[in-house]
Structures are given as C-alpha cells and as structure tokens.
Image (cartoon, rainbow, N blue to C red; front, side, top):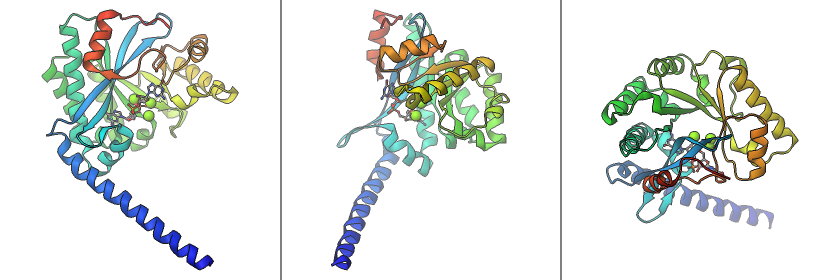
Length: 279
Ligand code: C2E
Ligand code: MG
Ligand code: MG
Ligand code: MG
C-alpha cells in the first residue's frame, strides 16, 4: 500500500511541477512582448516626513497589466525578468517613465518631490547602467537631485562594479537608498564605505513590533544617524507603529496608513488636494 501511495504522490507532484513550468514558460514568452505591447504601468506611493507629514518623495512600483491574467504584481514577474535578462530593458523603461512622470508633475506646478526607482542587481551591475540613468534624466529634463535609486543589501557583495556605479551616481548628485535593510547580509562596517543616503527599514520589522523587532528598528535608526544617513520605515499600517517610529526619531515613513501605491493620475489628484498627510 505504501508503495502505491508513494507512486501516486510522485505522479501528483510531477503533474503539479509540469503545470508550474508550463505557466512559467507562458509568462516568460509573454514577458518578452509586454514592453512593446505597453502592458507595464507604474504606481506611485508617497514617502513622507514622519514629523510634519509632508510628502518628500514617491516610490515607483511596477505593475504588469496582463490582458487575460489581470494585474500581475512585481514579485510574480521580477524574478523571471532577472533570470531572463529582461530586467535590463524593463528597468530602463521604469527609469525613463518615472523621470518623465516626475518632470511632468513639476511642470504642472506641484512642489518638487523625489522619485524612487527600484533597481535589480542584474541591472545595477551592467557596465552602462549609469549611462542609462543619465539618458533618462536628459530625455526627461528632470534634475538629478529629484531621482533616488533603491538598491538592496545583497548587491554589496558584487564588489568593484557595485562600488564604482555608486560613486558615479554620487558624482551626478543622485540619491541612493538601501531597500529592505536588515534582511540581507551586508556587514555593518562595510556600509560606511558606500556613499548611501538612506536606509529603508524592511517592512517585516515594522509589521510586528515585538521586543526583538523594536530593538532591531532602534538599532537601524541609530546606525543611520551615526553614518549620517536618513532612515525611512516602510510598510507602516497603524498609528501605533507610526508613533513608535516617531519616538525613535526615524525621519521618514511609507505605508498603507498614509497612502497605498496608486496610478499616476490618482497621484496627481492626491497632490492637487494636499502635500501634507494627516493621520
Ligand atoms: P519594495 O521595493 O520593498 O516595495 C515595497 C512593497 O511593499 C511594495 O509592493 C508596496 O506596494 C508594498 N507596501 C507598501 N506599503 C505597504 C504597507 O503598508 N503594507 C503592506 N503589506 N505592503 C506595503 P509591490 O509594489 O508589490 O512591490 C514588491 C517588490 O517588487 C518591491 O519591494 C521591489 O522589490 C519590487 N519592484 C517593484 N517595482 C520594481 C521595479 O520597477 N523594478 C524592480 N527591479 N523591482 C521592483
Ligand atoms: Mg523599494
Ligand atoms: Mg522594501
Ligand atoms: Mg521588498
């Protein structure tokens, strides 16, 4: 009997695996066409000064509007884009679109904010990455001070290419933030050698503020201050979380409590109403 069950299980799992692979292959095929078919869209989520509620920036977050599967979230296709190398053209599209959109808001007369763009390791370590950034700024007419590049901790392992790209961004006066901070493996002492403007405390710490996570958040805020960096908490959903972060002297916050990511037009409507979020 055991043998029978084992056999059935085996068949069951291979069937599941086949379906998973078929789905992945379909997504990959369609991901190749998604750019030319205009299926990507950026949503924007405010980042604010935690003390005044003033909006200082917006993070650009990509969405894939699939004609049959609906909206696909980045966690479901960015890994595939990285694997296939498609992250490079897609990432360049994100850079251009975000810069152009930000310049349009400035042209419309809104107070200037910074736009944060997420960049994957595979994209950041392309030798001409910084050239693409320059091109996005030149084509849009956006001044470099209004662009922020979000990288993640795991990239620090990439060594020389990583370091020289960071230095070039600094020369261009472009902000750099370290996303999902606290989840990676960067050695804390290596941080001081990198020209990074801001640490983004990963949302897993903010979500469940037990004693351990409170200690971690406190440690990250202190580290940022000592290294002369700004610090932002992401994934803030409750007033209790916001109050704790404020008490900790964290500078900025981002999360559903203040505003969810929204399409460009909704963001413009939001700006028309206010630049200061009360909560
Ligand atoms: P991330 O950069 O850490 O972005 C934060 C994620 O948390 C976003 O998910 C955002 O919508 C979500 N979020 C914001 N506030 C809250 C909150 O209060 N509660 C909860 N539960 N979630 C919140 P999203 O948009 O699904 O993006 C997921 C990840 O995909 C991003 O994580 C980023 O790593 C990646 N990503 C998004 N856009 C791009 C892109 O254009 N290029 C690259 N390379 N990666 C991107
Ligand atoms: Mg991010
Ligand atoms: Mg993050
Ligand atoms: Mg993340």
